[in-house]
Image (cartoon, rainbow, N blue to C red; front, side, top):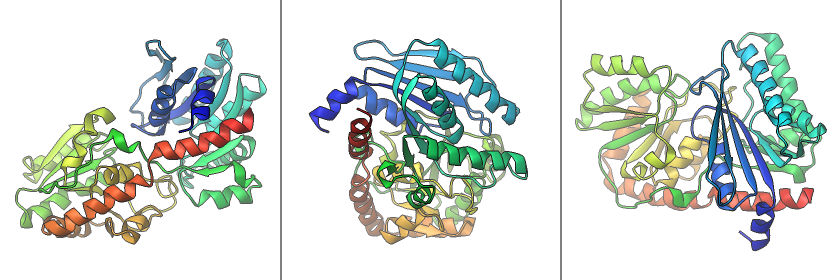
Length: 389
């Protein structure tokens, strides 16, 4: 990072807006900007109505040489349509009543980007970055009106923002077709700062890990059957599940039903600094995404996969996604069909071949260095900040 960029960041104020599910991009951006002494970083996490893990709005403020502060604002997440409207009004109220004018806002969905564009017109924001996580064609199931509104919001957010960031590398062509200048488009994969996670080359055991929300979309319902199959070949197999979700209670019952208490451990939701030191101690990570390819997951990037690779873990992932193709192409594990037997077969193969497992681990460690998010942010912020000055 150049001295000039660090100096420019220290003169700017940043607003980070997101609907919160789990540790993600707003948290990484917050750390990046606070470590570089930004004048002010405000992170506002809203409850995600479709996955209401957060119950209220959380506002975190950080200034150099001052203690970080957090404010909780009451909100709600149901029913979703009214929750989105109410949260939108809350955001407008919170920013307008504040005396702060933000130099840059990074909005992590189309609704928050539209609101940011509106606040820019009111003089409360100077530069708007729409950070798209993807596009879910069936986000509101069969509600044609809501899906049409969602599509329009996505278009107007992209064309009305000063910059477009996106997790899916294919979105560059989508945005260019929308008439957006290629110089304002940036693919930013959902990676992490490599040095924030422990990385070891010589770990081999029969322990594997699942990281993420425990729901159907992440394939959590396959895990008990996967482990049941693996146990036939590897009796001491153990999987740690880091995360929680709407299938957590079902999972606990299924574990008892199949007598897998000694093989499946549910660790619950952990903060990044809690799981980052231990992730490298596993022999592989699994990502059994549901094989539906017109959802947000399919048009996004997999932070789970990139965290596994950063820790040196071989990855077993559902095939067919743009990011799972990386695993096959670079021989970083296996991309398999979305069936419990396919995952169990791949797990057994990697846990019965120590040499192969350790060789993939070395490849994963080397490959992940190309995606260190700090280097990516440095390159992108150089252009963003120079643009609006």
